[in-house]
Image (cartoon, rainbow, N blue to C red; front, side, top):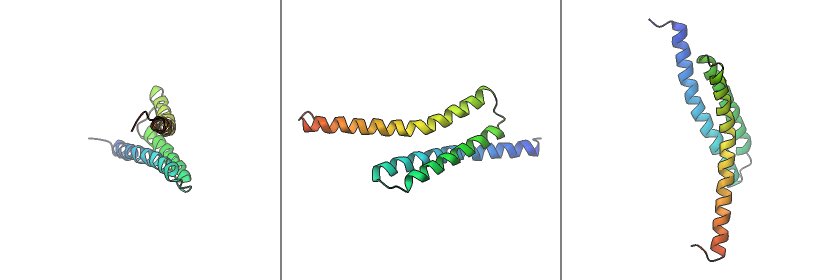
Amino acid sequence: MIDPVELQRIAVAALSAGGIVLFGAAYAICLALGRLKGLAILRPLSYLAYLALVAVTVLFAWAMNLTGGWAVLAVVLLVGYFVAPRAIWRLSVATHESSESDTEKGGGK
């Protein structure tokens, strides 16, 4: 039989894992839409979503007793979630700029 405390940690880990996905997506969406549409309110919301992502990641690490390399991996996850949407945005902007300059030169449709 599973100890009730362990069962509670499993439930917390499952819910916080879902929160990692939810808040990671919210951060990326708010960041992208804020830049795309120029909506100033979305930038602070993206940072709020990222703070929530940090909180649920810490909760997940606690619930799963992550130590050593696994704790380092959780930090790498957080850094990746922060950097990746920004890098993807820059890549998208650069791609569209080069595509537009090709079109202006008559090199594309």
